[in-house]
Amino acid sequence: MATISIKCTSCKAVLKLSADKAGRKVRCSKCNAAVAVPKEEKDEKTEKEKEKETPPAPPEPPKPAGDDDDDGKAYGVSEIIAEVAQVKEEKKKAAKPKAKIKRKYKTISDPELWEKVRAGMMILVGGIGAWGLAELLQFVVVIIGLFSGPQYNEVVEKNLFPKDAPAWKVGESMPLDRTSFLLGLVAGADNAGLARTLLILAAVFFLVAEGIYLVGYIVCLPVPERFGTKVQLSVLLGLAGTNLVLTLVLRLLPLLGVIGPIAPLLASEASMGLPNMNRFVPLHVFWSAAPFWEMLLTILYYMLFFIEPVILACFLQSAGLSMRDDIVEQDASALMQLGLGQAFILLAYLLISIAGSSEVLGYLLRVVYVLWACFLAGYIIRFALVLMKSQATLEKYIHPPTDEEGQDEDEDEDKNDKKKKKEEKPKKALAKKKKRKYEDEVDEDDED
Image 1 (cartoon, rainbow, N blue to C red):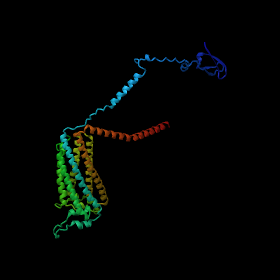
Image 2 (cartoon, rainbow, N blue to C red):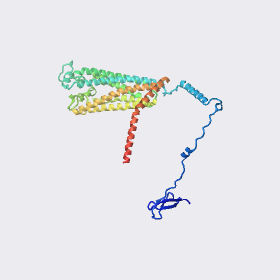
Image 3 (cartoon, rainbow, N blue to C red):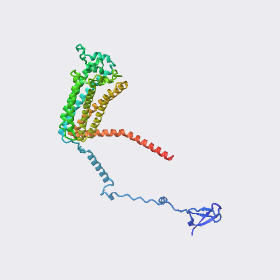
Image 4 (cartoon, rainbow, N blue to C red):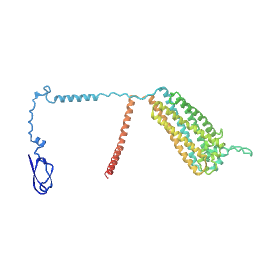
């Protein structure tokens, strides 16, 4: 049996142990100390050393030219010929023109009827333009009044009493030119004539707008009955006719001197002027023949006037649903919300104007009026753009573009996509950098 000789680490005594004790701990027989027995070292060589020691195999003799597997040809020639033929074939395939992919476009049923609706939308754009000009002329009158200053006494002297009126006699009603007086309160004593001219033009443009609306609605009447389009057009025709008559009676005829003015409708802006400050009764209420009924009539007129474009936006939304076009539907829905919002601001202004005449209230009225004017300007511009966009969308569905036009559109879309991706790359890189930084900070906190 094989033995192992080791020395005790404590007493240096020689210990003879059997080979199976290798790698274990034993007790010294003399000092009883624990001694670790080393493992037995094997004199074996690694595989790498064996590979190094094995002699290399002798090189094979070169094959003779006639002993090749390629039907007697030289080695590699057949492979080279096959590669050249493959390259030529690939070039031929690349040179062939690619077959054009026919693109399918969304179509719409009853294209002839929708063509008439598209024509009606183009007419309505003209009505929106006339409406915008009328509102602009009214805002010009208000702006002129802002630079006139407080001129209440001058307005009374120059505008309240007509120059060609007969001499007043005791017991008779005194002749008063309330229209010129109210216009003088809004635009200034010396600008009442100019204000009358501008407001007459504005009233004419309002009438033209309503007339264009009527023509546009009639042209759109053949629209297919979907999502209540017929009912909406019927309501729009009734509103346009009503607004046409009311504009003629309440706006134009008083300015022409045919009938007496509706003071809150003609001069509600007078409540913002300095002459109206700190009075017991606002001026446009004081000079009303019947304050309650005139204010009620003014509110009803404005609400009927501004509900018409809201119903028109509802009609556009129904048209978008019929076309299954989400963009037209969303734009029309936004127009409805914006129209209701600016109508609410105008209603708030009218109600605040009759609530009092303090200086604080006067400045509040100016803020509300400017806010309403900005909303109205944006509303009119956006309405015209949405109408033009809707008729262009209808044109695309009625007359789909040709393959070449579609290919150009695809190229433009690809360019836009590449541009967007190029713009998004720095943003994505920055987001990744922030994410890594955040992860590093979290790791540091975990280590702490």
